[in-house]
Length: 425
Ligand SMILES: [Zn+2]
Image 1 (cartoon, rainbow, N blue to C red):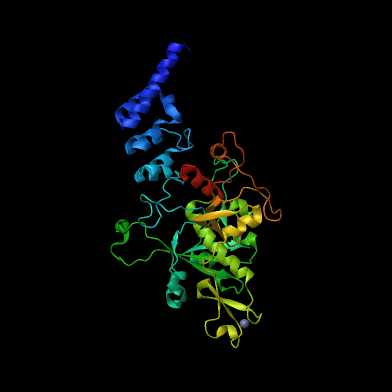
Image 2 (cartoon, rainbow, N blue to C red; image 1 turned 45 degrees about the vertical axis):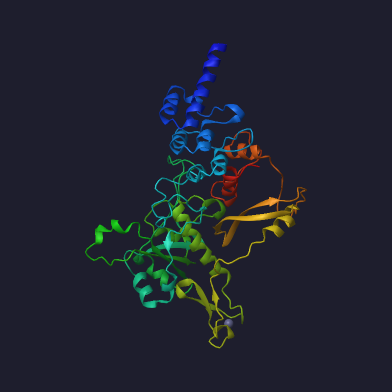
């Protein structure tokens, strides 16, 4: 390449950056149509076209650059991303655009609660989606439950040893490593014999959320038709026999939850987390904490009561309910005990149900006030400091200094959040 060609390239970069800074969408588009390789080129102080658009609040230019695959994690010489710049200059709509994760399967917003897919989506973690409306007030309504249980539209999920029956993607069937696992769904007739068995644990999960009220034209006539109710049952029947109920499809009960349960769609992962956590609670808390006697499930699987009518646990407010979320995280103490690092301000980011078997992960960002590391080997394997650029490179998979956990984990989402949203350091 001659020096003349080089300077022509440099000139094109300057023109692109200038157009982006002015918000000239037409010129930005035509320059990139002629030279797509200019997209991520930086000029003075490492500023890219996206950063300049973010600096001056040009939403349409930023949107066009992102749609062309522009790298939004690039940093300038001051280690600022375009998001940092938009945030600093108060362009909130642009910060929202740049802060979006851009992940999730197509159409995954379909089952979100109304209004949640707007400009400020709350952080959502895998296993965290509330696919069903839990209708907790209906758990004590025996008549309503009885009707919904035998409703032909009711959906039953079958668990054996806390593992849900799934239709597994066929090995080598073209689905590849990313093939999705799907829950096997049964109707009442297919499982009603199991419901009669004393060892079966039965849990009401909730009803399907209505997608959009205006789309219910199919049942305008009866108008009052309720959405299907979902139930989970855990049984100790022979797993091989249970699999035959699913009509010869390639179904199984996954053996390694830590790996296999990460392959559902976001919607099904939310249901699995809810069902498995409650079923695991039943399997581990089958005796009365007051007298040590046996207990039986009540309230559609969300409470257990002592079988001894004279037990103190049955008087007053004593009983054993499935634990609700209600915890006081202590990140200050945890971080110092496990890594030796003292932290100051802590900010909660999001939480994630983790049904292995029934935990709640809480993700926080904290500012360290000391740097010396002393690892507690019983708790964690290793702790290290990484410069911001190394974190960004590892996240993008280029010159990875460490392995970023898979996207289903809250650790991944915390790193993503920090990379995309960290203000200028
Ligand atoms: Zn008791």
